[in-house]
Image 1 (spheres, rainbow, N blue to C red):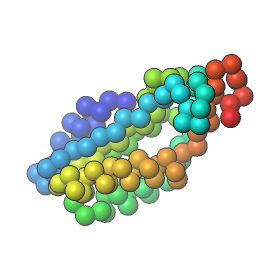
Image 2: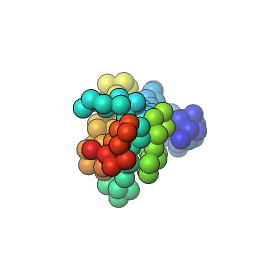
Image 3: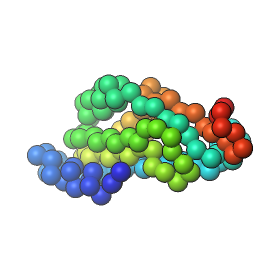
Image 4: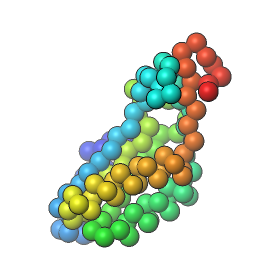
Length: 124
């Protein structure tokens, strides 16, 4: 995942002149679960068709010019990149909420994650 490349892609967008801001998210595997316990790895699966729908819906939001998403499915170790999202739009009042909504929707609607804990090959 290369956020800089994603940003450069947004800068080449035909409607770049309408952008006043680009905001990005880079999710990484953390070493401690929010449920407690040391994480060794995660297994993550994404549904590309749901991601496409979410991106399309986000692009229709007021002030949003474009949305780019990259995901890294499979078994990922602590520190690995999971998902990158970049949103270009007119103002921060539009772009920040669109970025947060996109990330939250992909996590809730388009992905499944299983944490694998230290000393546990099965996961929880």
